[in-house]
Each structure stands twice: as structure tokens, then as C-alpha cells.
Length: 251
Image (cartoon, rainbow, N blue to C red; front, side):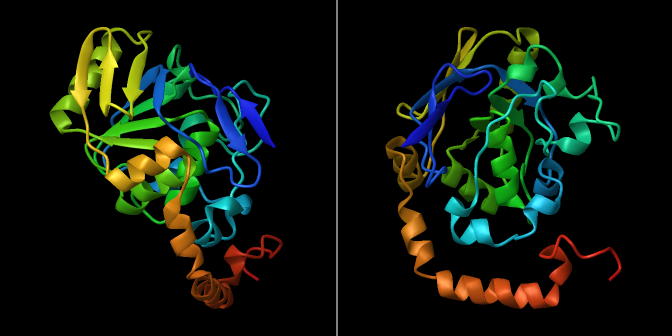
């Protein structure tokens, strides 16, 4: 059984299986692109640490521990959003200067980003938050290496292009933000009516996993689940405050 939910800015229906929500097929996506050209943007800034992120290792050992719950940015969702500290003020009001709060970028499903996007230690949660807010494609000169690989576990396509190509795409998006962009994983190309096609390369194995909606690497990781559980238990003893969300600060 599966749930089908159209995400913001999408011209496709994403099938999200309940048992393994990260097994999401990706072949071709068309949507609004938003420019966010911040270099070395850390995963912790995409997904600020909150009580629902208390187990930092579980989703790396087995992505099916994570639940993808797409939500709109219309005030109806009361959980954490991607870019929470940038998108919303402490009183819950929107920051009108943040790109994803602006029309038409509010409905963006493609994000144009800067160098080393997603670096840091909370990569998987950063990917999950981006998927929850409707992002299906990232285009950047480079990504944090672990973040890059985690993207494939959750049906998020990271496209690596030269800085010049990324800048050119961002300029065209800024000039005409309502034009739809298409990212084709089959043909490995990025196109818009005023741009392209721009070719990109994806690791053949990761590309096939996305095209088929499967994750062959998960099986390999599960073979090491015992050692991952042992490492998580050791970390739980060393840093119990990350796992016990009921623990009072300073105790």
C-alpha cells in the first residue's frame, strides 16, 4: 500500500511507500527553480537540531527509520521546516527576505545552491527536511560528500555542474523566475525554454537506484547494523542529552 502526494511546484505525483519512504523513483522532474547561492551552507542550518532529531545515527544505518511527511508552507504545519532559522522569525512569522518565502519561489521544487552545500554532521536530516518541503532537485558546484550520498536514499537528485554553469542558470532564473525547469535523469540534462540543454554526470550505480526506485546500498549497510547499533549505544552513554529529550537542561 502507498500514499500518493503531489508536492509543491511539481508536475508529477510522487509515490511514497509507507514501509520504505526513501524508495522513490526519479526519472524526470519539471518545476520552479529558486536561487540560493550560499557557499559552504551546513546541514545544521538546513535542519536545526530539534527534539525529533534525537537519534543522529539511526537514519544513517537504515533510512527506513525516517518518515517523510510532505507539508505546505501555508501555516498549517507546526513542525520544523527546512531552513527554519532563515525562513521564520522566533515569533513564527515569515521572513519576507528569504527566497523560499517569495513568489513564485514559494512553490520551488528545484534549488540552485552554492559550493559545498550540505556540509557538516546532520546531512541525512537536512535531506529529509528538504524533501518534506517539496525539493526534488539540487543544482550546485559541489556538495558535502555524505550529504550528497544521503540524497539518493530519499529520492533527492543532487546535480553537480561547474560554477559558471550554476551562475548562468541562477541568472536566467532571476530574470524569468516563472519559467519551468526540467531535470532529466534518463538523459542527464537540465533544460529551460531559455536555457540548455546542460549535461551532467551521475554515478551509474546511484543513477540506476533512482531510476528504478531502489537502494542496493541499503542491503550492504544493513549487514553492518550490529556494529552501527553498538556505536550508537556507545554514543548514547557519552552524550545522553542528545537521546533523552525529557532531560532538563544542565542535568
